Length: 218
Image 1 (cartoon, rainbow, N blue to C red):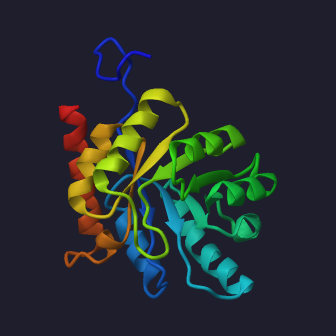
Image 2 (cartoon, helix red, strand yellow):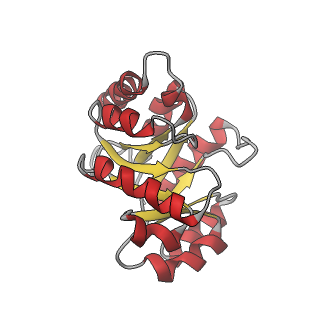
Image 3 (spheres, rainbow, N blue to C red):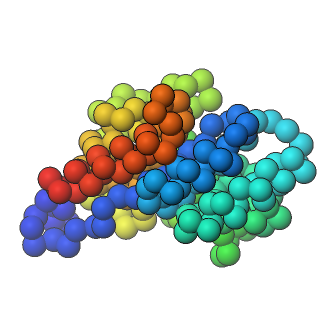
């Protein structure tokens, strides 16, 4: 396959934003409404603290209209069995086994995304199994992840070879442009946006500006 840097090759669209919520639901509805009005967001990954099934469903239902009215997809972090009841557009699964277990529940009506992919082989297995996207670079439950150079390299490899979209996970503002330039189809942003002293909406608008810059120099 020819390099994506070859001017004769068609370019993929500029990456879109994939917003990952904090696990604390307090004030989330208002923050989401403001953030989604500040930038073009393709999807929102709803993380929730451990709780009962009804609470998960009710929280997702309360946010679904906010997210979907802005043209974004609401993705549950796990809980594929609750996606339909919650009015969500799909679920994000961690690891191959979780993805395979969820496919019959989610497909064909809903999105099945996959992260927690430790090797290139794992990522290819996820694609072959039917993942709608793969995610690279998200921190694990202990907050650990590979080096950023390794993540950017994985994104660039995927973008060069595969058609299935990939999400590059940025844990800081200065990771946004390199992931975009590496070829990510979506850039996931989360805690650093919600923790920004300027507010989530201003931080997300800043991320969007950086994506626009990355597209101009690509």
